[in-house]
Length: 129
Image 1 (spheres, rainbow, N blue to C red):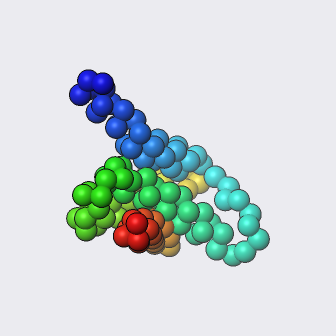
Image 2 (cartoon, one colour):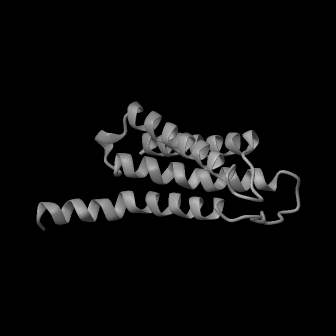
């Protein structure tokens, strides 16, 4: 396999899932009057935000470390968590321009907690290996 093929394969395997998931988030955020699934309790939308950004946080840290033990260092985990939080902040800002949507600090908190939780869980699981 040539070097460029290796890089493309690595990009598709590790980075593309994070990019696609971020694109899904952007698309959903751009929908006016998006309905949150009714889970039967008051803060279901915050749980949805947490889950969506937990997936993003996991995909980011997976891309950054590429499942290589030597890449599992604090700087990569901190950077992954910050990237997930910043994407959540940009998403909330983006929603402020969409009719029927709003920028909510409580959503940003749920986004941030989800992204950070996924990064911490990834670290914990990989430290145990």
